[in-house]
Image (cartoon, rainbow, N blue to C red):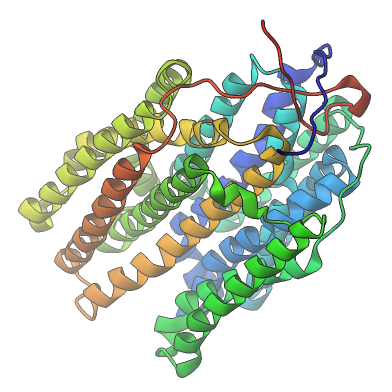
Length: 498
């Protein structure tokens, strides 16, 4: 028998909820845009700041590390101090960090600003799912969550496409700095709208912070990602091999602490009961496989387009156009299909994406040095079609079978796993890419290295396809409602015959 749950009646939905949605989703867009846009700007940053390989990898990977390691703690701070407050503070910090990135005069300053930017993103992003869950009634929540998924995909592709446009436009002679400074006016507008439209109240029963769990999770992430980011350029010293091994006992010890804290009636940052849910565990694995594939795919292809095929940032960005357009179309279709078919939509999406990857792999292998963005357009569009079915569906389908009382913790673990997987995919398959490339840094060498990355990505998509069959095949699930007395901040299970 679990803890007793109050039966509550429906509270009137917040009339500003649809105005609020694009405001909070802007945080998702900005956080992902700034993750991917640096791929396009990296050559320009290297040239102007005379950045070394180590500095460049920290500029790209430092943001991902800070973002991934701080997400769970950011979510818990939202529970403690209120979601609107943390969202506004996080957006303010993200805007300031973006300005610091844009005015950085040295690689060290840019690395520090990127770390700050990642931690700021970790403060604002967890509040998005919390606010959607709290504000939208059960019948509307799947639609709102699907828009969350659409934004994830669009933000990722926009980083490549719009990044190229901004670099080519060279606004006010700012060059690569414009990709960061553009966040200043956007951030100020979002802060103003969030202060007006987001619900202000916090949970009546405030949870306690779990510093041991927060530090343990962050340390485990750091022990894995930092060696992967720095290993190649540092020549793989002993510490880069020892650190990932140390991450295993650190993670085991952290989970043991979380389990003991849960049994004592405490509030761990990771709820151990989540992993006894087969649907959640399988969904977590699907998320990891898909995000590792997508992050590494975008990273490797950007390198090939700019450094291998010698395309301009604009030309490289526009090469992702077919992927982005196809994603936008199928993601709209996926929103309705998930409600009816559940995880089957994800399974179909993995098969479509896999077909696109296989076609692109064959094209790269057979065409060799004669490959061009035009010949890549069709397989890129097919990959985009598949991802448009997958990405918007991942969060909602995986959370369908989770007890609503654990929805906040589940969302925190899920989003952390997504960011960790993206960073891990870029780091590990980036190492594979450069190892295969070696000293053969010509057009043919870059395409050969891309082929290896595509092969591994294809395997990741195949794993995701198999695991997706374990997810719930119905779009339905336990209905969550928010009692008016708590202003929408703690979800509770509602039983109803309606």
